Length: 163
Length: 188
Image (tube, rainbow over all chains, first blue to last red; front, side):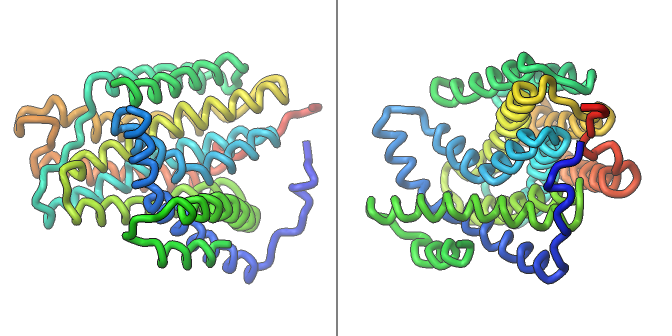
């Protein structure tokens, strides 16, 4: 199946470089502004009487919004592999680059570095791994698998609100 | 839009914001998100898959990591768990939220969602290994009390994370690129 998108001319090298640098700027803006609004989110979360962990989740959702939208657009165009590359690639980059960076930083920083998850999060992680394996192995998925993952995600959000 | 976001960021950095400015920041934030998606797609179109998704993932993470380290250097009572919470939130949002939404959208629109089990399975195995080594083991290790790694263990976790991530990127972009390309339906 060939879409109009596949036929469009590839952008020139100059356009690509401009886009790459604007992408960097836009992402710095997204991450920075997400932290900028965090005091407002914090006071909102406190006013609503919710647990403090909700703040971190909302900021993580904001920071990952570009990936989410890009992945959804690929899914609508029936390019699910690209969506999965984006999702799993982001998870992997997040762990694979953050852990070495904080390990290196902990040489200079004095405070403790707590990495171990609590028991409820550990259960969620284990369940996510099992369910994801079952989703991935057949190479095709129905709305059921999508629903199962979304329920797991809802459970994570619910635990953030009511730990 | 990206330039506007940066200018606004410079003005608002480290200040308490009144309500009207927060509204403005939210609008610019939304614009910056859309701009990022657009430019990522332009780059992806030029370099092709799977390099395109790699660019977006690495770019966001590098900026995120810079912020985590900066906030940890500032100190504060919450900074000791900041790295863990951020990474775990990212894993849950991507592996359940984004994956679930995309499978749902694609399967509702196109019957079923089809993808490469070889490439995706390898990616998932890497995520599971990375997450367990770095986020689960510290709770159970006995060299240091509490959910922390000792120095040697931390070095091992950091090195194995880097090696696994490097190996994955090499596999995805060079040796087995075809496992990570979108599937085209025949006769569809």
